[in-house]
Structure formats: C-alpha cells, structure tokens
Length: 177
Image (cartoon, rainbow, N blue to C red; front, side):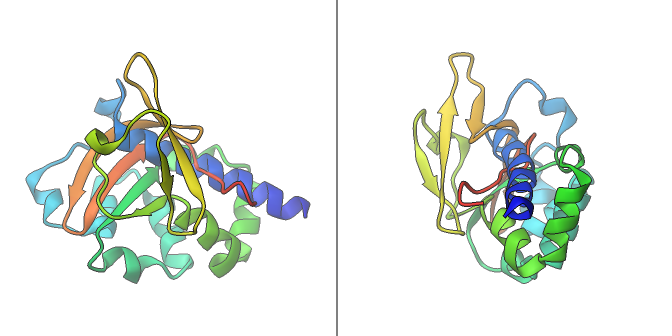
C-alpha cells in the first residue's frame, strides 16, 4: 500500500509539469517552442527532438505506450520534463519501473487526454478526463498561469502531427494511487 502511494506521488510529480508547460508560463524560454518541423512529427518524435523529455520517453516505452502515442490520435499530453522526473524520489521511480504496465502506465496515462486540447480551450475550474479514466482540474490563475492539477504549464501548444503537447513542471499522480 505504501509503495503504491509513493508511486502515485512520483507520477503526480511527473505529470503536473507537462500540464503547466502545455498552458504556458513565463518559463517558456526553457522549454521547447512550437515549430513547423515539430508539427510534422508525432508526439513521441517531438518529445525526443526537444531533448528535455528523455525520462518521459523512456517511461512511455517501458510501459508499452509508444505505439499508441505514435498513433492517429489526436491526443493532448501534459508532458513532465526530465527535471520534473528528477524531483520524484528514486524509490518511487524504482517502484513505478518495477510495474511498467500497471502503476507506471496508470501514471503516464493520467497525463494524456483524448483529443486535441489547445491552451485556448482550457478554462478555470475545467475538469478534463484523462486516458486512465480519472480527471484533472485546470486552474487559470489571475496572472494567467495555467495549472493542471498541481503542475504548472511552462510551455503550451506544441503541435504535433497527432495532437498537442503542453509542458509541465511536475509529474502528476492519479488520485486513486
């Protein structure tokens, strides 16, 4: 029970940064910016090309979700950066990686929303249902900062051939974990 809680906390810490990045904040210079070449690539290739999502991409591959995120979509991914994953305790990461198609997949799919949801589609108090069946609350602060759960969107609207990526600064953990 304690291990599952830790895994959920780690996942939550990873997903939040993706959501924040998707909505955009003043830290946009530190995250990848949309470009015409990125729009021609799928979600996975776009994340690989950005260079700041190596942990996320490795986790997606370990969980067997790569083919899905290369698929037709569209999908909206609240993508935690490598720094967001680094903030997750190592024991939590180890526990998640020990259960790639269970706990790890649950955490990762909590960062994915079916459909293409651009930052202009998000509103304060909005609830979005994730691929894992749980919902994320969107908060738009008075200063325009967008939060997805506890994560801040640092870069929003990175368009891909099969959806959109919003970069977040925290890994999100599903409430059920």
